Length: 178
Image 1: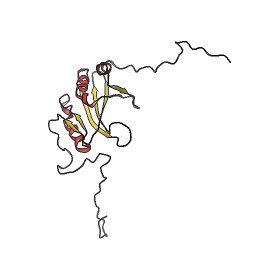
Image 2: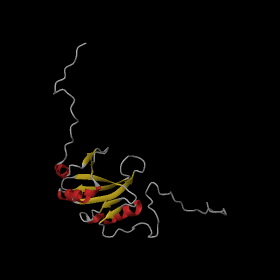
Image 3: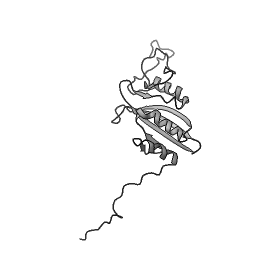
Image 4: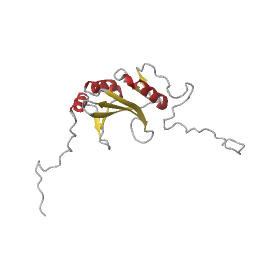
């Protein structure tokens, strides 16, 4: 049996790194700790440390991501190791025809992330919605109050540990509320 000789040119090589469009390469190059993640839809997804979220979004704005689209959150309770929540920010660059999804993991009894309203003022109401429904506090927010639920509401209904509520329904011909 003959041994096969493998030359360095034929050897196993690392998978090629994706070629990033110039604005994304500029932003991710300035933040070496930011990691590019693969998306099933082909969207550009970057994971950033929550502590550098404001700096990163400012760098995105400077690189041409002039339009803020959305801020939301995901609760991964017991589904993965690491932070329980991801704050998800979607930005759009019209001049480069690019979208970017920014993920920042937050955890804790009272999860906290910095507010990006100083960079994108349109994030104001979206951050209030995330606070109201998930309980994630945004430090530096100008008016972090409930936006959808009554002020006396206890809890955050989109957390996975929040009890599922119901409204009693009275049907005709019955004597008790079900």
